[in-house]
Length: 251
Length: 72
Picture 1 (tube, rainbow over the protein chains, first blue to last red):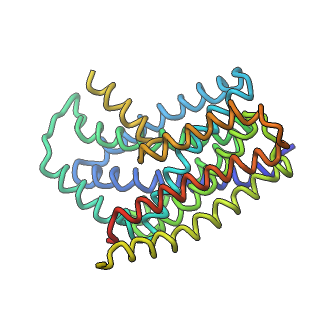
Picture 2 (tube, chains in turn red, blue; picture 1 turned 90 degrees about the horizontal axis):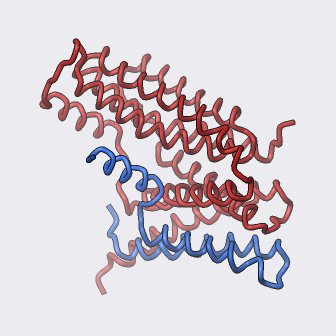
């Protein structure tokens, strides 16, 4: 039976995190395809997706053989580092302290780089294009794999979390095919903000469980942790904005 | 061998952006794992203390960064 205190936030976190990562990957794959040809761009992306699928199939069940408390502690700590890193950056971006990520600018920079880059062919394949496409999908995909395995395997929800990530992949591919340009209107920082909140909450919960602490309300405390991290993050946006403005003022 | 170093660097960068935040989180988790179980306090309060510590670490890091960097 599915535990919805875990399943809902798990699927949502996997979907939103994957959406952010795949949008970034799509920008580079589109640039590679447009400048260097679709055959090599799609071959690189496909090869990376295949490698990532093998990683999930190999690593997911392997985690089940490690004692649960150890997995909870290790995965919880990694989720905390990953989630708080995303949350910190999203708060600083929302407060105007760090510049927002711009997919259109990233696409223009990548297109320029690829237009002037070297051209090496191996058996008819543009190796630079295949490598560029493979590298970006692997890089962004590794983050997706980590999130899916971390939030899915520990709570026995690998399949629902995988479905969340797969849904994001299909959505991004469909939008890429239809629009044929970077998905600049996706509110990337808002998504990163929400994913940072969700992953930080999961990380804190798993570390507590792994350390043998008793969360009030047991599994339902995940929802309380999500609400607490969200309230903290929203108030920090206002506080950072004010603190940054006061630091700018001459004394 | 360069690609192995590059891959390792990318892997670390997944989890560490600001070094001081990562070190503080790891230190607090170590305290929670090693010292909390020995404290004569109810487990629920210790779980809340774990969250409170993490929240404080994030707040301190953000305020320090906001003071250091001008707005865009």
